[in-house]
Amino acid sequence: MARTGIGLAACLLMPFVAWSCTPRFEDIVFPAGDIRPPGIVGATQDSPETFSILFDEGVRPVEGSFRFSPVDVVPTPICSGERLVVGLSPPVRAGFPCSLTGEVKDSWGNSTRFLFEFAGYNPDPASLILDEAQTSKNQSASNNHRDYVEFLVEEGGELGGLKVEWSSSAKTMAYTFPPCRVSKGEYIVLHLAPESIPAEKDETSSDLALSGGVDSSASGRDFWSSAGGLPDETGVILHRARDGEAPRGGLFYASESKSGPLDSERMKSLVEELQAAGYWGASSPPLWEDAFLWKPSSSRPLYGSGRGGKEAWSVGEPGSQSPGSHKVPQAAREKREKKRTSKGS
Picture 1 (tube, rainbow, N blue to C red):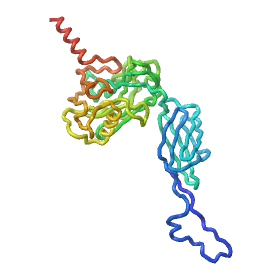
Picture 2 (picture 1 turned 60 degrees about the vertical axis):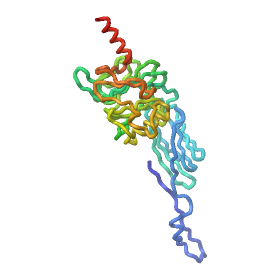
Picture 3 (picture 1 turned 90 degrees about the vertical axis):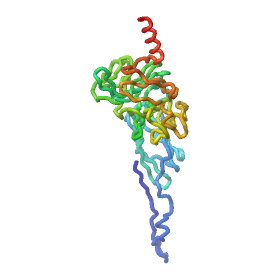
Picture 4 (picture 1 turned 120 degrees about the vertical axis):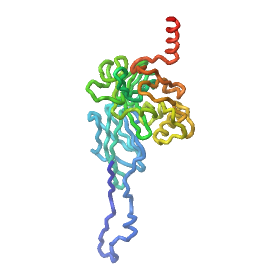
């Protein structure tokens, strides 16, 4: 974002005036009028048809300065005091990558240019439940898996614009889903360590067998992100219906060797968001003991419910990864195995 300030008063020479026109020192240091460009207080999407920017003073749009991508959308700026509302016609698709550039001026002529990049507003977000996570690569010949998270669609709607964030102690990564309608009961698999091969395709249509690659599923809907893999042993995952909103669920997991206060501000911030939204019980400030503690293993997935806190999570059996399909709960698996064994004896 570039800003330009405009306007120092010029000195006028007038006839028959006996005093000098040389400006005083205080007029140079503290010139009359406003030379500060408008500052941006915040920006938000209100609907698929509008984008709003709040400034710290009254502004007016600079004619001809507004551009929008995709180019078939026409931006129409309207100012009301400190607020600039940009109308978008036709409305932007949910989750579609967008950019808006423009320029405004205040009453003194000071100007501010801006650039915003965002995903199209989603008025009907699908409701998702995080129910499985493969936190590391397992490249054995018999159990080949790469990092992924899986969601169950609790209520159908638009997937576009939903945001997933995951963090280690050193880095926070994010992914925003593209436009896609989904139905209740579908499984969404977000692959986080792709091999970048042509077969890895986002499945936004009805063809759920379109994609190939490690852990792709013909029964689930596959998406691929190059933002970075999950932390192998200790991390936080959460998802939001829209960027900037409170989370709708998540997972806080840590190696069983961890104890005491969190030493990562990144992870602490996300855990506190989950706590405030009612999706994870935690101390204040959060402790490592508040996490789902486990003995890390690349051969065993984590599965459960991203809305039930650490008590809802468990470690799957070796090789029990099931991206894109129904999970058999551990208790049910043990009961079934016990029944099978008793019949065989």
